[in-house]
Length: 570
Image 1: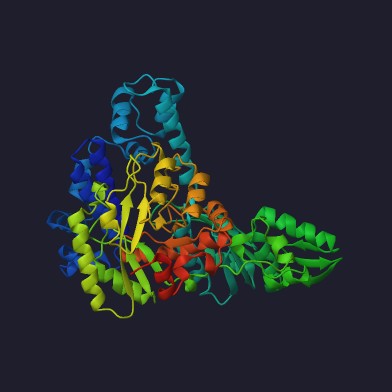
Image 2: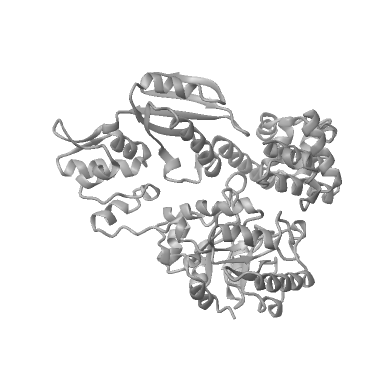
């Protein structure tokens, strides 16, 4: 499918127009088109041939013509026009936090900055500081943005890493030579970002397995090819990524999987425990003297040490081994426990699909309930709802509910917490809703702690969304005292969100575990802006599992009648 490629083109056009100072609404139109196309589940080429592009909300005549042009010719004139006079390397710098299009254009025009190397140079020689309205503080913030940008480029987001690993594993399992193939390392532990993708394989004839692996479609370069290891650079729809496989005998597979899953700290503690028992643990098995006593399965490795099997997500040496020894390991929440999603957007604000389309998608996931939480009016860039439009949506949801007796459709809003600390809608309007999700979308350095605490005090607010505001790939988040925010959430019995969008995963596992220890309930929400985004729930659940959350810690594992009582829904 050409969906992602076309989405990237529209994003690039938007970047170029923003750099050139074009009108905001034109930039926003291309951004929205990119998002809509990226989240399409249908092949855009097929839709174009069926003349159905214009039926997609947000795809107008002009955008449809550009898509048709690209699909027929492989080129788009608008891209060439927008990019005229701008290099790809320069435009990429817009992904650096604290470096906006106006500042970037100024550095390009005045200092000749054309790429990241040039930008670093003008910071080091002090010339950037001397530009109009710059100063040391702003340059320091740009330096922090560069560090985050480079870190993000060196790591692969969990969603992309899982997708790539799944493709590789499916390819490997087609071979009769291979008995098992499992991702290992930080990917199996479901960390937020991944370095290289490591896959553990068991089977006979390692040389043939590696040869088969290196002939996989999409291999750009073979880095290593031996009897027990293979390493390649794999082409993807975005950046190339390194994928490594390691082959072990089936009788050692469990020990190797335990060892290569890690973490390093967890394994050190495991080896120390083994030593106390007169045993030795390695990737080859568990040994008493020279005799192998376990290793075919992971469970056997843990069992011989007097431990139950420990879920990969919590193997971080954060007390899991002590809990296992005391038979107090948590029964971690699972994706199958989720009964609904309490933060979903529609095309009434900045999303792709209609109310009804999102309801039908939720039914396919066997959800008992969903809550629509479109943006409020302060989020004008996201087509936020005015009071009148919110009332219309409330009425539309009421009418829609009549047609569905197998799912509860909740009336909600994602209401902005303004710079003043007040909410974007009056209490009179908010009191008419079933679920109120409060969030900060602007003024990241302006009294954020006080504003969030003020929102928590409001009796109409139920959930605090993406509480740190971070985007893993490009910004660290708000200037917020999260400890104080959690104290307020506990005091006022408010719910904190794990936002399952892979570039947020906010709260992270550390703060989520802190919230659990404080007795604060958690909602795992996707913040979905399209049907495909509902599948992000698994990433939110992985954060919850890394934070030791159990079913009773998560409000959207509740059955409808219990959630209704919790939220005091009429």
